[in-house]
Image (cartoon, rainbow, N blue to C red; front, top):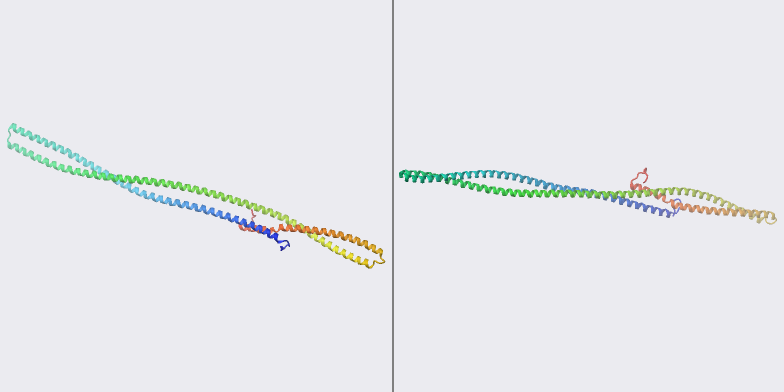
Length: 377
């Protein structure tokens, strides 16, 4: 088979297959670059979303724990204030009871002193009665008065003792209540200390989480920078490769232009050689007819025409010599024509890739979305 220009088609098919294979390779590389870029972009976006979501979840949990601990701590501080006020009030009441007890003690001492004085006075009256001879009735009256006074003093002492016992019971009750309040206060204080320690631990956990989040963000940013550098290097390599392909395309176009010029010259030479060959063929045919006519004339007029025959032989020899010369020049023209045909065939083999290169350029424009007005880099 042959192409419309009359050249062998196997060369064109081979070149087209090579160009199509190269185009498929470029498309595969472009798909790989697009896939790598999409993967890097999705990885960066997913990593950032995961970090932000994790940070938000941990921060919300820490904030809820902090709010709950703050509310509990406020209630504990409020209860501690109430307990402290109650303890202060009870201590004031205990001091009042202690003062009252001291007053009762002093009153009891005073009454005991008065009772002792009455007893001494009664003994003195007895001695006076013995000494001065008072009447027994007067002394008995005095004794009765003293006895009544002692009885009243005893009753008062019993009343005071009951008041003292009640005061002591009240004091013991107050002491017990104070001890309970102090125990509750110590328990609440311990709970408060535990809560404060728990809150400090939670704050430490929050700081650890914040540092972890910062480290995760730094790691993600470093990874993103590395991926961007990789993507940039891939883009630069792609740009370099595209520049190399563009340079090769320009070189091929330059070679193609020079080959077209050479092909045009060779076709001109071939046309001139074919014209000369046709002219030589016509001359050879004319010389052949002239030789045949001369031979026929010589044969018919051989007898009696020696002079004419010699002239004819000389003319025939000259014609044969000229015919040989024309034949040799015709052979050289054929050789020149064959050489021109070989050159044209070689140029044709190299020129068959031009259409494929144009198709490759169109494919590259469609893949990379280059408008027709922009030169391929």
